[in-house]
Length: 365
Ligand code: FE2
Image (cartoon, rainbow, N blue to C red; front, side, top):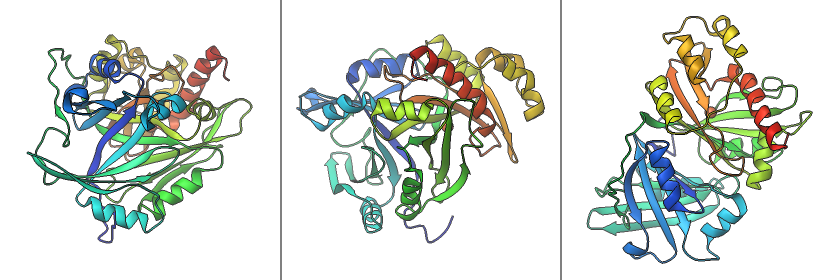
């Protein structure tokens, strides 16, 4: 790790979604995705304007937050974007310094550093704006031993479906508006000290109809990876453009969650009703030529719809859910890395053709 890293990050702390009905969303993430109940804040804990449920699986923590009153930022966010990601929180050792270093490099402040305390210690929180209405919160929790953050109580419902083996956030992708990819990759480089890993242009990633451009930004230790996509002109509307239209601007497109055994995880998710994009059977006719020998049984992968890609360092297994809201916006990726550090570029074409079939059904292609 570079010693001159001005923004050391230990990992993703949590992802907060602003949603229309946090209680029902929490039930969905428990039942369908196997998230475990962790913490709660709402009327019972003295809040008057919102309710938040915190769920955890492996190291992945989601907060689902809804407004209790009209006219709040939360309600306005949902009205504008539908259910979506508001906060990508980053776990740091020094939230004051993180705020200072990023704002002096041009980040727009969202939350000046504050200290929150309860009987379990204290946390320092600060925040900056990123693309669209999305924000980063820096969370310093080294002096805190409570269940989540001050203000939250343990959430202990009787209903606890088992987890599905999801371990950590592998990467989180942002879709940004036309012509804004470089603005935001430069933001991550200049303001947050990230490096660019890879870039694709529309020659790499295009089908007959749709195209996109993408660059992957990563922090110094590689724990945080943010691919940034922008739409590119195709014959018809790309899925990135569709997202931008329905989300009404830039926002988080997908959260990729890692597993150690994609066959068990995906088998379980399918059983629980999670819907995945389908790939044509023809994909599996040629995949062996492209990726060579793999440990897994290809027939089983085909049955589960798992995609395979290889790079210089190994291979990866991945697949994508359909959007999990009414609007065609946020979805999830399930990924298992077997040496590969890339993002499945070889699968993009097969995948996009699959997404286009979905778009055609929605009449938005
Ligand atoms: Fe991804």
